[in-house]
Image (tube, rainbow, N blue to C red; front, side):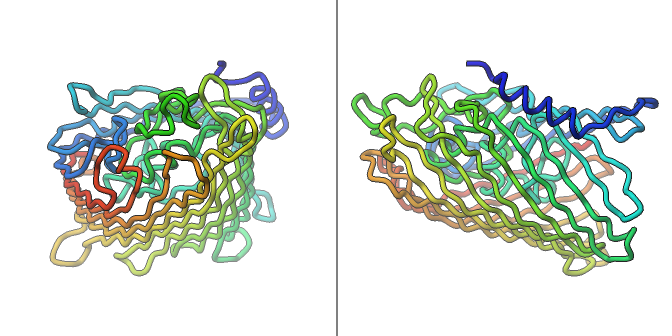
Length: 430
């Protein structure tokens, strides 16, 4: 089926014509930035979720050398506030049985317009194209990389895997510096398509942690389970999930509010709803009605310590043609992280340490035989980074995940499992 429906193109075009002003274009500025991240890892786990297993990491059990990310983002800006953006990412990780997870492709592509603030301090911007909804507080480096850890939290790993949209976003900001206030206020709203199967991978491999983003048009494998066998309730499901499809021509939405205190921190709240028809199926790809709210906080506790916290809670539903529930899950995820910069201490300012604690769960609310999606777990991440130069960083990271997942029984693996990973990375930002 077509990746971009006529309906999608129509409403995005209308959005662009309404909100992107026609102004003369003069000077053009080009900016190219990116990241190259090469890692060696030692993993105590199962077969990776990227290879169709129940392992929580991008790497399967054992030691590996991998290109965890090679990303580049190009921005073309005009002096009237209009800019065009494209992001490309590549990955290579060797897997079991002489297979590998290798991929190269597009992750974002959009136009953006940002106005000058008016006399009252209001500024608005619009974005049209393929982009991430504004959710993550971790993945703020080039090419949506995480700045303070090698693996993203399980919350943002899921966003990078299954939440991407084709649509338009409008954001209005009241700038405090122009109104004698110490804070900025922002409100934004998005309309989008092409995210109807979102929720399938979360249901079938649970929460995971890595730096791996799904490329636009890329299909992702999920583990085997009995309900997929002939005669099972999910026998019609395709072998891989295609998360960025449009199946029902319904428009989803995302709304978000943000409060920023100058030189101190920010608080945000948002709600996402893809409005997918849960009994719609095309070529083995089902619609999943997925919705969630999210909260975020980033706060400068002192000159050297930054706290980052996020929480997400929602549900997802997939049904048969008769509109009987096949997969009905609710889910929750939250993390808190502290980042410590070693300026003015025994170590110099080139050192930075991060500790992150996570709690995650999935509750299976349906009665489908052979498809138990229940999960409960906690995770710990310890990271230390050293800045060799302006662009080169060396990072060491230890990850620990303790989870209860009954679906592992289908492959005769332990339902209660502790997984561990140690990574050393050389990262180059350009």
